[in-house]
Length: 181
Image 1: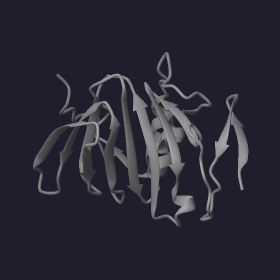
Image 2: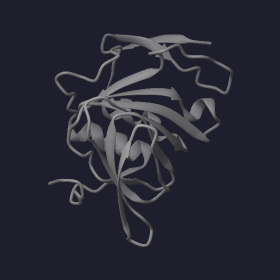
Image 3: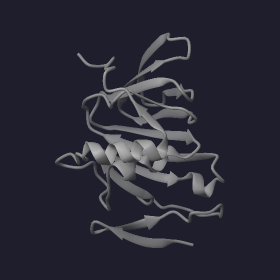
Image 4: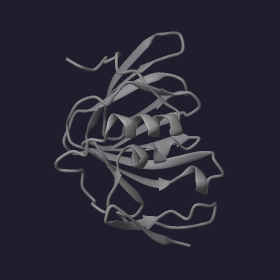
């Protein structure tokens, strides 16, 4: 059922890749570093016949991620700990912004521009996404066996991010920075 894989010297648990029952112990999953964040994929589209994925996102207080949209992916934010400010522009162009704390929830429908900024060093977010964009993080970042966010941050090349964005349907809007300031 499980397979170990190695990429860049990091050996870790790999998800089964098909819809079969499985269990993960604390810390297991497909982990990646991207900028200052640790992302752990717990469930991908491969295990759910393309329906949804589940991941955690851990990061220190920092800058907002680039504003982006997923044409066919719905995304959720459930704060396991810490605080994150989420900004969403809906289909009618109305802007919504909310500071989420532990236990709070946010939803971004497919096609809506959005961004977020981690506001506390102990922040951990659980995300559920439809359609399978959860492996974007490893494609645009680097796989890791670490259980901590990267120090120093992992900064991918613009080409690496562009390739991953095309593959996973992310439309970045680097000209739109609503949470800066």
